[in-house]
Image 1: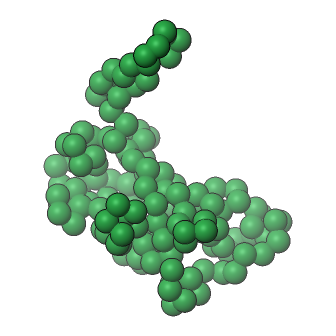
Image 2 (image 1 turned 90 degrees about the vertical axis):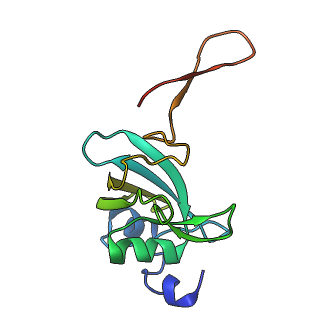
Length: 141
């Protein structure tokens, strides 16, 4: 995380300031990342989970288009840069201790979020209450 992006956010304050205040004070983990949950702004369906570093969070806020940090690629990426399935941010929220981001988005392009072509990355359910081995069932979110 570079100083220019980390300085874009308020320094972490007291628990009361973090939980009740109106300054954005994101808590990045030891790797400089913060969790980001993405949902469809209209339906509320969970679309994906990803990580953001300070630069990705700042670019997302500045541009209104979701950017993330790819741990597998080791680089910043704008969702949809290859597929065209961009995520236009309609609302961005932070949780109570400011260590997770929630993006409510509209999906552009073909309207799919997952790289597999599914609308959501959460396209399988885990069968609960069954004997081993645990199984999955494909669903249309």
